[in-house]
Amino acid sequence: MLTTEEIEFLETNGYLNLGQLLSPEQVKQVNDRLAELMETEGENAGAELAESKYIRHPKEEGADRLADLVNKGEVFDVFYTHPRVLAGIEAVLGQEIKLSSLNYRAAKPGKGHQKLHVDWRNSVAGGAYKVCNSIWLLDDFTPSNGSTRIVPKTHKSSLLPDEAMTDPNDKHPDEIRIIAPAGSVFIFNSHVWHGGTTNQTNQDRRSIHSYFCTREQPQQIDQKKYITEATLQRIGEKGKYILDV
Image (cartoon, rainbow, N blue to C red; front, side, top):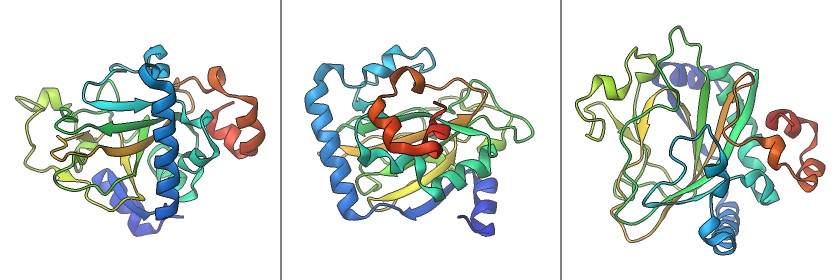
């Protein structure tokens, strides 16, 4: 599903643009369903994150959150089953993978900045990576609306941002921004330094993260705990394997 050149770019730089994997119609369907969920869940939106002991900052000021999207509509199945995404995840972690969480994040106007960070507790030597993310763009990502920043090649660093920088909130001289149209998907090795930026527009900047880990790691969202019979009936054996249910 990936070319040799794509795999080499991902290995070298720690991220890869997979292109537009969602049509405009699919993007609209997903955004419509997310709006419904935000309305119905209200103050409880993202409550599953707060229940997880593996998520350090479940409530993020300045961003809307939803979690456990696996069980909230067939429209979300593509986010953890798309062949090109799975190929990218496997290129980083190997074939023994599972979904850790499937969450929504929308940076609010004037908010959304994050310090540069990694999604693992320490640096990883020798390429034995533990976690890998994919970010699905539900709006155009622009230089002004809080697009994600990444510092290429830092997944190979022996230092974490807090150790290497005076202030990881600052702009890094080597950072790049994810700038692409809605429907695009980016894989990034979660050991690469990354973070959200400030949304300087008057509209939310929306995305979904399908976050994967190696099979021996605990999931951010315990899929066995939340899985519904309707989801089990729908996703088939491949889906059950990816969810580890």
